[in-house]
Image 1 (cartoon, rainbow, N blue to C red):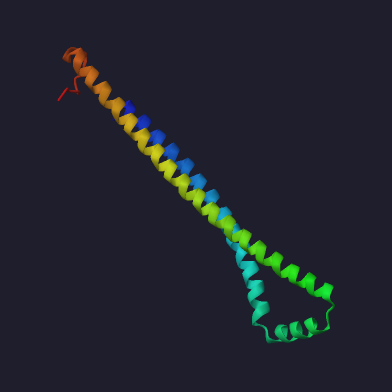
Image 2: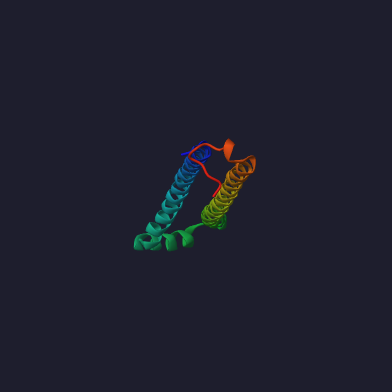
Length: 141
C-alpha cells in the first residue's frame, strides 16, 4: 500500500467522520423540532377531542366580552402561526441538510478525482524518468 493511498484513506475517514458529526447534529436538531411540533399538535388534538372542551368553549363565547373573544382568537392565531413557523423551519432544515449532503458528496467526488489524477500523473512521470528510477516492485505497464 503506497503513501498516496494511505493519505487518501485517512482523508476519506476524516471527511466521513465530519459528515457523521454533521448528520448527528442535524438529527438532534430535527428531533428537537419534531418533539416541539408533536407537543403542540398533541395539545391541540387533546383539546379538540374533548367533548367537555367543546361545551365549555360554546359557553365561554356566549358569556365573554368582545375583548376576551379577540384575545382568544389572537391566542389561536398565535398557536397556528407558531405551528406553521415550526413546520417551515423543519422544512428549511431538511432542505439545507439535503443541499449540504449534496455539496459534501460533490466535494468528495471532486477530491477523489483530484487524487486519482495526481496518482496517475505521478505514475506517468515515473515512467518517463525511466525504469532505473522505479522501485523494483513497480512497473510502467
